[in-house]
Image (tube, rainbow, N blue to C red; front, side, top):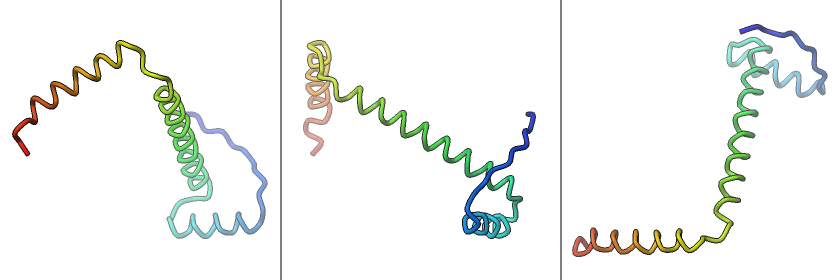
Length: 84
């Protein structure tokens, strides 16, 4: 994988916190920034996925889905009947 150098600007207080954390974690500042950005991107992807899943469940069920759900409930009832 090819690396790319970049320069960023940030508040001094944030830089100092990053410097301290990198030292505590025994990683370079560059590595710390890479780890933080990777985690941020992953969390953002997960939030977007959750948003799409929630949107899909907001749509009302069509007749076929309702019929399948009722059949699944009946099957489940028969399977667990007498186990309680």
